[in-house]
Image (cartoon, rainbow, N blue to C red; front, side, top):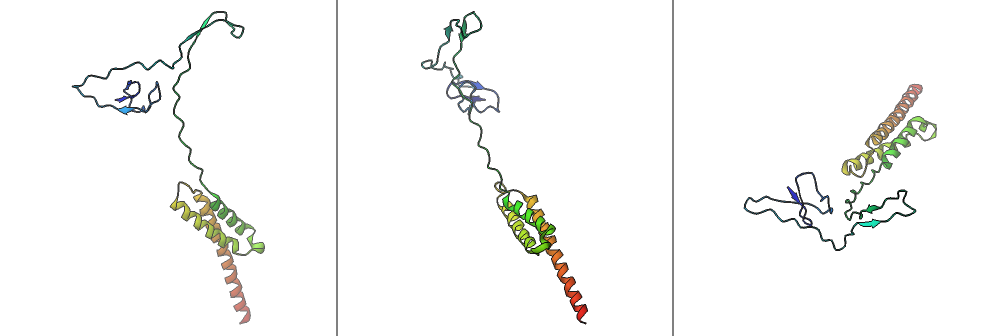
Length: 171
C-alpha cells in the first residue's frame, strides 16, 4: 500500500508512483495491526479558488447561468529526458568509401579507398563495442570493412596476375 505524504490518501495500486490529487511522490506504508490508521485531513483552502457564479453575457451561447470550476493546481510530472541519437558518421563514411572503392576506385585511386574503408570500419566497430549507447551503425561499419577488403583483394589479385605474366614473359 502506498500513501501520499501531503494529503495522506492511500492507494492500493502498486504501479502508481504519484498522488492523483497533488502529484506528490508516494511513499510505501507498512500496516501495523496495533496502530490505528492515520487521519485524513482536508487540504488547506487558503489559496484555492472557490467556484463562482457566472452570469450570462454576450460571449456565452446559452442564456442559462453556469458554474465555473477552478482550474486544478496539480500538474503531471514532466516526461523523461530523451536519449541522445546515436552517432553513425564513421560507420557511414566507411560504408560509402568502401562502396566507392569497389565501384569506381579502379579508375584512378587504386586500393587506397579500400584500405581507408577497412581502417574506418574497424575503428567504428571498436567504438560501437566500447560505447553502444552513444555510437551505432554496426551494419554499415561491417559493410565498409567487407567492401574495403574486397577492393584490396581485387587489387592484390591484379598485382599477382601482373607479376606472373611478367615472370612468364621474361623466361
